Image (tube, rainbow, N blue to C red; front, side, top):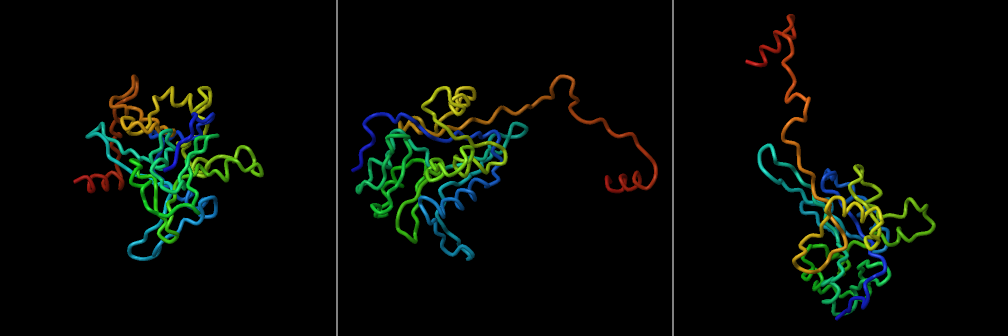
Length: 245
């Protein structure tokens, strides 16, 4: 079995995802698929992509849920990818050493030439973040675009995961969560960011910012609804009456 680093990584690179501003547009899913198909874990193959039952390997998916009822109800979009856990069970169950956690930055990766596709890592991961590439017979997972964030040929502003770079609402953030003064750490502190299923003890690096409470009553000085428009004559008034009956 594979061992985790004996000392905590000096850096804990990861994502902070704002569930309040994520609109579920799937841009991060498409950008992740496109970049990683030609990047570090390439290719991410598909089976029957234009058939009746298309299947394929994705490193990032977005699930949508309805939370609450009535006026308090809202739709929450929940992006899901590898959380790069400190206590990564997917690493410790790997029989070949293919799954490993980097000591320098905490990123969890798969060395594909050692992977035998046994699926133990997928069974051990409670977050469903591992996917089997059916064509290659090896496990795939989020790499935090390691071939992008460390690429010195790219401008420094571009050295971030593809999903972060493409997000149209700025819901995704990338940085060092071991640094309490980093922008991502400050976001987590200000918004009570959380790691899913903390009771399991895997200590995920990635954090989610919870949706803000929705306003159920009008603010002071703001009318609850627009006043009815004054009736007018003519064709439009007649049409409005007809359509209202």
